[in-house]
Image (cartoon, rainbow, N blue to C red; front, top):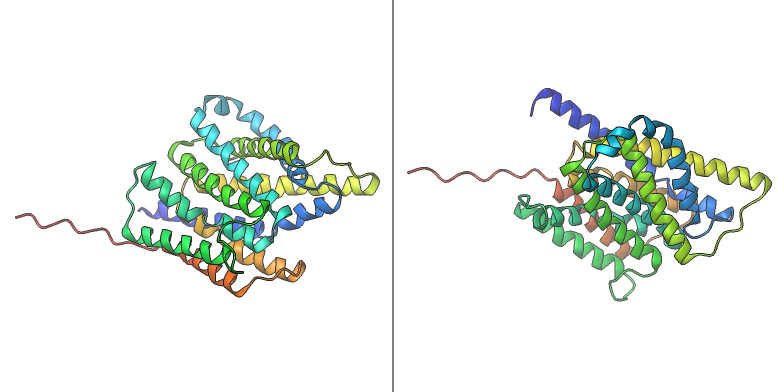
Length: 302
């Protein structure tokens, strides 16, 4: 790897870490919109709509590039938006730390997709990481003596979001040459379509807030759409093309720490000791995913 490539990798990694830290606070605006009357998926509808409106002028400049992009590229990016929409809605129905940890099984799914769908080489250590991640999932979900499967709609959404995000990042890395602004716009549209479909299926039409509450809701939706779904994800889309999907998943784990601490301090949410153990195993799986692996030596020629 050249010095220039190392710098690009370092910058991309820093962007992903910063994005993870920012998304650790994402649950705050989601629940604020819920408190203002946009319950269920409707808060995410407002956020993704705000993001799409803010990104539309930038996307128009890249309209030809979007039109030239292949369907695999557009579908991969839109699926990423749908994944984040599921993740966003999960915060309405579940505990912050559990939703984040379930989502962050993404390195496990990324490795499985890379090996069995894309045909990428998979070192033995990656299989160990998969086992550790799945063990962590079982411990976390069975912490209270229950069958170790997701409980509640929010947990199922978080698990599905992680799988969808793994599919998305694999497709983006393999095929995407779309610019950051255009990618973020397509991403927001994917999130808007998914959240609107879920809102219509799961929740009655909301009663829109009036007066000051309406201004607050509009401001929160636009700020969240612009900062989280616009600026941070434009950076993430740029970085995801330049990093391995498993590495993206690992660096985004900064969100786990920030989300768990912020939820404990601001929402009073606590975890069962076994949930902490399971979460630690999930994080260990992510670390093992990107642990340096020595290439196998070729047998000597006789």
